Length: 368
Ligand SMILES: Cc1ncc(C[n+]2csc(CCOP(=O)(O)OP(=O)(O)O)c2C)c(N)n1
Image (cartoon, rainbow, N blue to C red; front, side, top):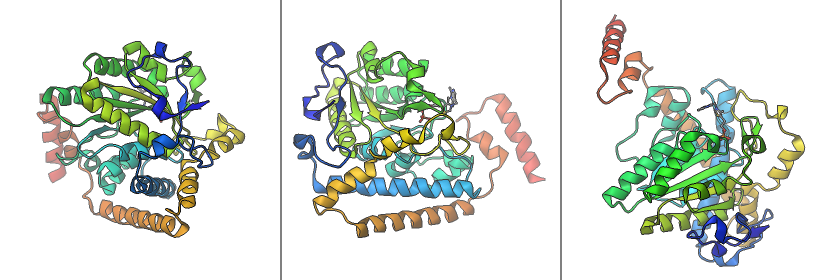
């Protein structure tokens, strides 16, 4: 069963809903509108921008997989299939908002403003991939599962104390919701009414462990109820629903109402990372069921029918992304090789004595 976004009231709690977490949807898998009221709140430009980002994201995923197979990058957590939950969401916030991503959200991080070559440096484990400009509002990708929530809640608290007119957006996976960090961060944000939007990208698996084996909870959205954080469940393969939900959540948080939790029902088409074989834990039939919900095809169908999209435009975005990847790879190659001392210097603003000793030791060695 699906419901309209307009039927959702973020101020309601679990008990207020007759059926607590029906899934918000605007476009069905064929790209037909099921929530006219919500889609009418969005301009053609907004919808086309989401489409461009999704085509860009799918292309980046394809290229990054190839680059990894060629040994040109380190490892990669694939993002194909999750473009609506990642890229439609990031498009719904501004660059003044703060973003706390996981290892799977690199496309969104680039769309938020990280130069692509820096993302590639990060894949290679190069310290330059962790050095951001001061005016770039994001943390480096969090690899510790569940680890995005506490720092994201902290930044959101800071924003509240400073009276900032911006919010924090963070992502985590379904597996992350089984971690203590998830509850601690969410509870903290709820208690202090911090402007934090948390999106659980429920892609059904924590590597090979299905969600059903991670929790007895019927939904992951209901985890917000325990800490008093308004939560909704959204079709995470529906770019329009994701965009509209995050836009509404942002407005709600900016009004001083506190955090919002969104469970995005999504799926990764590829492996967990390049060292994973998904055939060992999921069937081809299951993958096909989810491929039929592809966010790219869904929005393409809708926009094509409205005369706002065509093959030519799609090819243009595809070629531009390929070119961007090429340029980022050559810029990455120009970076000086990583020195151990650089790596150590990047750990603390004021290094403790043992790190200072190690820095001095390596600097001496590097000069020899
Ligand atoms: C604290 C911690 N435990 C274990 C791992 C190893 N690990 C890396 S990814 C992953 C699965 C995470 O699943 P989920 O949160 O659903 O996110 P997804 O990878 O599906 O995006 C695990 C267990 C880790 N990185 N951090």
